[in-house]
Length: 314
Image (tube, rainbow, N blue to C red; front, side):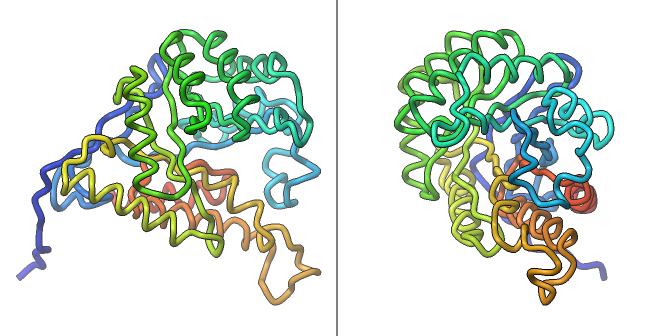
C-alpha cells in the first residue's frame, strides 16, 4: 500500500502579485497551502530566485568566491544584470543601491536612479530596486526610480514605517509595486500592510519583507516569523498577511564572517568558496520552506543548487 500523507484543509490563500511587464513578467504567490505542500492543494506558482546586482563595483567588499563569476562586469551594473539573465538564467533582477548610502559613497539620488534605469532597460525580466534603509535617501531615490521606470512595473523596496507615505505615494503615482519591510515581527508586518492599504496601495501590488537573518545569524527568527505569517494567512484568514514574501538572502549571508574568511584564515572551516556558496544555499532553502516566494541570491552555484531543490519539490 502506498503512503498516503495526512492532509489539512486551509481557508485562506496567498495573493498573487505580478512583477514586471511583457513576456517575461513573473507571478508569485497564489497558493492555498504551506510551501511545497502540493499534496494538500494547488501551488500554481513555483518560488522564484532573483539574482542581485549592485549599482557600484563591490570588489573591495566581496569575497573572492563571490566576485569570480562576475569579474568581467562588476563595474557595469547593466552588463552585470544582462549576464545574470543570459548566462545564469535569472528570472528577476534585484538592484542593490549600495552607492546611495549616506554613510558610504552617498552618491546623488539622480545618479543612482539613472543607473537603475540602465539596468531596467538592459533586461527583459522584472526588476526590484533595493534601497539602503535610510528613509530620506531611499525616498529621494525611489521617487526618481518610480518616475523614470514608468510602465515597467518595478518593485520599490524596502518600504518602512518611516518612509511608507512618500514611497507609497510614488508607487501609486507611477503604478509600481512595493516591498513592505518590517523588523522580524508578525504584528509589525501586519501594521505596515495596514498603513500602506490606508494610503491606497492595492494588495495586488504588495510584497512582504519580514527581514532576513542568515545561517547562524538570526535565521531561526526569520524562519519563525515567516511561518507564523503563513499560518495567519492560511489558517486564520488574516487578509492583511496574505501577501507573498521576499527574502534578501545574499545581502545577509555574504556579509557574515564565515563567508569571507579565506582558507588561510580559517582552514578548519573547509574550502572558502564552497563555504560561502553553501551558506547562501542553505539559508535560501530554509526560507523557501518557511514560506518565501522570492529569494534574492548572489552566487550562480548557490542559485543552481536552490533551483534544483525547487524543481524536485515542485
